[in-house]
Amino acid sequence: MQRSGRCPAAVIAGTMIVIGITGCGGNRDDSGGVIARVDGVEITMERFQEYYSPPLSPFRTAEEEYETMEARLDDMIRYSLIQEQARNDGFLQDPMYLRRLKRLETTLLNQLVKLYEIDGIIDIDNASVETYLALADTMRHFQHIITLSPAAANQVATMLTEGREWDSVALQYSVDTDVSVHKGDLDWLVWDEGPFGVYGDLQEIAYSIPVGTWQGPIKVENEYHFIKVLDEQPRPKGTPAEEWQAAFAHLSGKQAAELEQEMVNRFWEEGGYHLDEDQFRWLLDQITVSFNTNRNVNPIPNLTPEDLDRVVVRSEDDPWTAEMLLLELEMLTSSARDNAETYEDWRDRVLGWVISDRVAKYARHNKYDEHPAFHQRRKGFIETALYAEQVLKLRLGVRRLTHAELVAYYNDHQEQFNLPERRRLIEVLVATREEAEEVLAQVVAGRNIEVIANERTIRPDFRQNLGRFAPITREEFGALGEAVFETGLEEIGPIVETPLGFSVFKVTNIQPTQRLVLEDIEENLAESMYQEERTAIVDRFVEQEWRRARIWKDFDRLREYAAQVSAASTQGDSTAVVPAADPGLRP
Image (tube, rainbow, N blue to C red; front, side, top):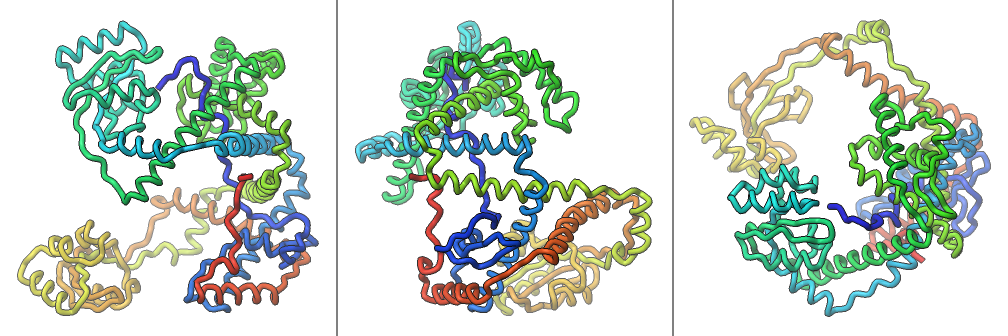
């Protein structure tokens, strides 16, 4: 839905960047105790606990817990070896990486500002919660059409009055893409959901329209709305506590969004920003042409120095040029770039970059970048990026096999391409032998086994599939597989006791032994071997570095921690060994 004249609301928080703590570099933290060293780089117990949160299970012995922990510690050592090579290769000085790090810092600072100056002042009282619950007591099924001009609104009103189908009118006239795709159907909504929650007056009108009637055009700012109420029913409810909690969360989120919008508008006005529509459309045209020319690369056009200096977002002290915006675009993931987007989507994205950068400068001025969690997350990003960069570099050295190489592999490994006999069956699985005998008698008497499976099998997924199995080999499923291969086509087998219950089955298809033809599998074989080598080349690198590196592990400390976890698991006390949840960026 368009909201003319507004700076986009969802820009202050930026895009959330998930940072996994996969590294083990850094300085020693004596408070956590050193549990391993890799070429002098220390892995503390605190870092290990951040990486591996042990599951508290009373069924895991101390030795089993120790084996799992040792494997996880080895993982951290592998990550450290890969990260060290990336450091040695100078990745931390790579211009693209430095731009990504700056964008990450901007995102984290935006989050800090939101937490300090928005989340910290949200205030929802009990009266507001009770009022919301009363308004949200019912749900309504709406249809909706939006137009942007009086002429279009009059045309829609005329067609609806004449009895034209709402679906066809919505498809033809509604400017809300999501609504028009669904033929104007908003499905069931409660108070504050969907497009009506954006404007208070429009929402009050929508919930006052009698069921089975429509109203419109309703003018809101520069938009003309048509609303039809198809039906109404009570809203399903949880317990009083669940209802109160859900209402409180909803109202908190709504208030946060309003405060966020106020902050964004303030930063926009203080920065004196103005989007030059002509320059922006020109830049978007260059991006579109570049992307359509070659979809396999970043859609970054090759512009002259003069064009790169064009100012797209004007400001007295903080103008944004085409070059600055293209550098932001270059850092987007492929999925974020490749999705088809409207002019408004691109406009909101660009303004989002500008505002989040302004907020980050404000945060630095207020020393939010001195927050410990900011540095912790920044360090985690560096470690993750080091690992990902080195893995990518190793994998880029892998090439796909030629046709001649695939033929040679196929001929040298013929046993891999011989498929054993496989059989399909329909099974009814029941809990007792008495039930199985009853089912067997019904099948022998001629009752359809698929119908019986739908009624009686104790496997929910098999009930939906009418008891049909995927093809199995003799070696699969133990005694059941043996019985299936001793039963003829379209015959009913004997009752078989399995770990899950008692099985009654019928063989429906026999696929004889066959040899796969290279022509039929060459493409899949090439891709499979390519992916296997991409994994293997990283493993070989780690193995080589492991032999070279100076690695020390404190096995005694690890065993002591495993014993603590095992004892706490037995007692059901997680606080004794598992560190508190990461508070993230909260002050």
